[in-house]
Length: 232
Image (tube, rainbow, N blue to C red):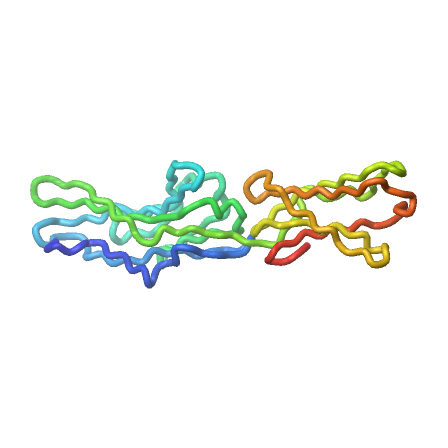
């Protein structure tokens, strides 16, 4: 190989290492590289074995293969079994070896995607395999307006003089909060309740009103979820 690396990543033409995208959108990922080609290269003979597109979670050490390209002139294709979080949401564009994720979800922010190329290298005394990690390793941040997971009840029955506690669950990224407002009360301003994280990207806010009097009978309580992206 004359001291030259047979696989040379071209980061300038590859996807960025950190992609920021909106929930339910799609991202196109590509790892660009040059390869000197199969056959003699200096004192060794090279044979392109495969390229892998793989995924691992920041919370789980296991690495799973999503797509594979076999041989120097092969096309990138999806694995026959795609890991459950991505099943039905991924595709490849063989013409330019692009990997696509559709319908982005908040949990996709916990994954990293990477690619590598394996070559069989024969210096004359028998072949061995070398693995070349392509750059970059890609992480994705999925942002979105918060949505209700558990909506408030349509009708609230409470006794006069009692307390009301209304809890809602929501998703969103960045972390959302909830505004609770009585729109029919003159001069009413919303009460903002910060959220508490229940699970990754799932939050809860609870509104409390004490010693309810009869004037609240028939009034409307409006709940608005919001974060820095928007509100719903």
